[in-house]
Image 1 (cartoon, helix red, strand yellow):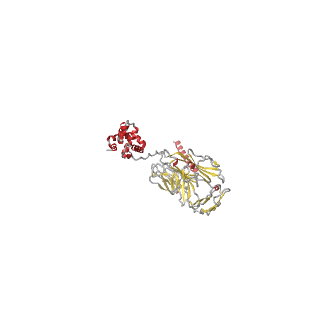
Image 2 (cartoon, helix red, strand yellow):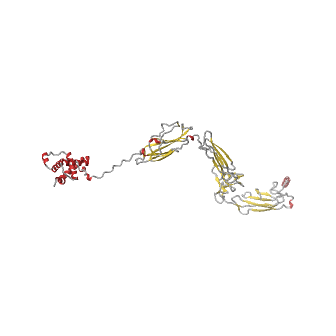
Image 3 (cartoon, helix red, strand yellow):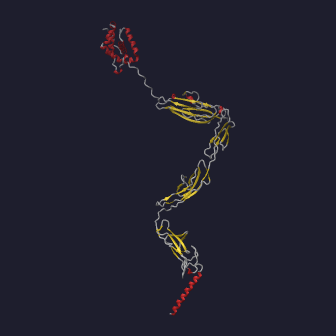
Length: 557
């Protein structure tokens, strides 16, 4: 077996070599595999190792490297010069192995042929906020509009590291030159997180600017006479944009003094009885003249610029022409008849109930009615000829519907009274009626004919329209009909109509005065008229004569 084969296969050599590998792991890692191979080649060239395989070279290199770091025991140079090279290498290795300290297992270095594949570097941590390279914008100089886009690369907060304060400002020319300018509008936009922020600030006639600041809004002055130091434009911060250049625009100078005419406001005729109308616009710097025929509806409105003003383009006269419709007369209607008010009354069929009062109207085609309570409250819609209402005073109004003209009286005041003061059902009473009469008589006390009643029985007695109120009422001879009527709620028990005939006076009573019904000159006691003194005197004489006769008889006795 050759020396080289001994080194490679000797068990004691292998154990020593393993210990040397463990001890030399740090040095080998530092200088790399290439440096170890170079040392091995030097040793071979010097005669220490005659030949070795790839593994032997690695093993020998490890041993030599270890020996370089670990002092070796003294060697007899004479003996070494006479010994074979393989023997010298064999003796050096154990000496070094004996002195090298053992390394912990965790420090074992895997041979180059057994190294693991390299790993990818660890991912960088997410940013805390969105940096400025996530900001981009577009700007349209034609109308001073655009948008700002903030793209989040995956930050922790989803917000910009430093927000944007955007000022959208427009200015107006004061002459037909660029400067000076007066402030027209100022609006503000806050950009602080991911998203798209559109903006627009239309310019009338002047300049439009988009400013930006990182700490606050830029508030413009009332006027400017040229570029200002405080003007920080959006484009100056270096954000990404597909529309490079200043975020500002200027209107053409010929816009100064330019005015635009506006078409007139039109109202076309609708139903009959209505006129159309034409109302010219009110526009600063524009003069309008109007010609309008309200009967035919034809109109012409001519617009021209005022002094010092002009329209866009070459045409400085604008004419608006048309027709809003001709006027048409409507047919006329009239309310025939007046509204009526019906009182609120008791409901005789329902104890303690009432029947509501109401207002009636005359239905007329093309006419609507409304009822307004004068005491206050909402109007009452009329949907039929009768409308129930509570007691009170109302104004009834008739209104023409579209397509008709209402003539005549259109408003009335009506009062609905309350007759249902007490709706308690009365107790029903049955009353008896009686009628008598007296025929004319002659004698000591002659009488005229009369009709007799009981005025205290609660019954009303009447002959036609004459009501009998006395117990005895004189009537001339003839036929009469007396009607007995009970009070409301009561009834006549029995006969209520009484035929009466008063006979003519006897012929032997002398001349009796014929009396008319209800003659105030009638004397109820005698029936005579015109001889009160004669009758009184006769009675007095009779009484006096009787008295004298009695007195005479008593004296004789």
